[in-house]
Amino acid sequence: MAGESTTHEFNRKIRRPKMLKAFLSKKHALYESVDLGTADHVVLHFKEPVAAEDAQKLMASYSEPNLRLQVLNDKKNKNGDNITTAGGLTKSDLVKVAIKSNDPSAKPRFRIVSKTMSDTARKCEPLQLKLWRNAVMEARKSLGVVGFVAIRKETPLYAKIRELYDQDLLKHADELEADRLKNKEMRQKLSSDKLASGVTRTRVSKTGAKAAKRKRTVKKATKKRA
Image 1 (cartoon, rainbow, N blue to C red):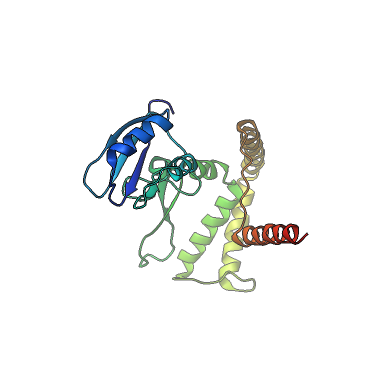
Image 2: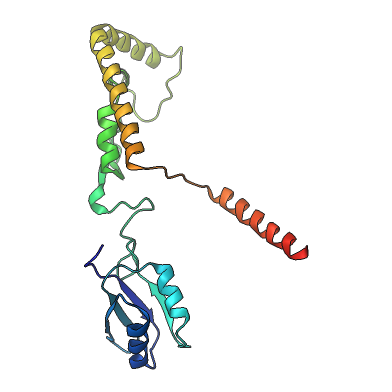
C-alpha cells in the first residue's frame, strides 16, 4: 500500500555506505532513506512495499563482496519472527478455542484457529450433530465413564447414547428440518461469496511439488542432449 514503508535489512559490515546510498538513489525510484545504525547492519526504507525478488535483483547488480541480504517482507517482523500464518492470517484474525473434554481431571487443551472459520463453523453446525454430542456427554456422565472409551455397537454406552439421541430427535423433529434448510442456504451463500471474491487457491503437497521439479529437470536435460 502507498505510504507504508517496507524495511530491508542488510547484514554484515558495509565498507562503502556512501556508495550504497548513491547506488540506491540512482537505481530505485521508491528508495527513501538509509539508516546506517551500527557497523554491523544497514536498514533501508522505501516509500512503498518492495517485493523480495525485486530487492534481490536490485542488489545483485551492486558489487559489495561482504554484503548479505535479508529481506523482511510482510510475513516477518524486524527480528525475523513470523507475524502471519502460511495462509496470511495475522494475530487479530486468530482465536484460541478450548477443546472440550469429558474427563474433569484432564488438563485444559486449546487450539488456535481462524476467527472467521470458527464463527462460520459455529453457525453452520447442524442441530442433529449437537443432539448427538449432548447425548454422548449425558450418557458418559450417567454411566460414570472417564477417559477415552470407544463408542461401539452392542455396548452399554452406545445403547444409552442411542436411547437419549432418539428421544431428542422426536422432540426436535420440526426444528431439525428448519435447521437443515438454514444450513443449506448458508453454505450456498458462503460458496457464492468465495467465487465472487475470486478465492481459487489450491494447495500443492510437498511430494507433488518435488515430482513436478524432477519432471522439469528431466525435460531440460533431454533438451540439452538433443
